[in-house]
Image (tube, rainbow, N blue to C red):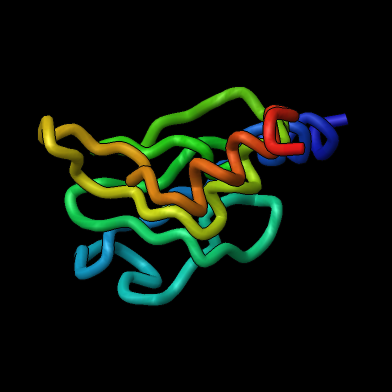
Length: 110
């Protein structure tokens, strides 16, 4: 019974945080990491921003936790850039490719 509880708690917190490029950190610092628990990604973060959340959908200045649901538009973030925006806050940089993907994911690009 104890093993089941430990495994349940461990899997409930299986969120991944991608450190910003050039950041220094603990074990594995400097190694490329996937941005979400759903698989490898080409998304990247620029200091001081980090990609976090259970599905790799959050771009913020510090690691954040989220509920573990999957939305179609999260796949669009796989190649996106998480970096400081014009207002100084971390966010996903809007590119034509990201905008088109989000529109298609929402059903408006057909």
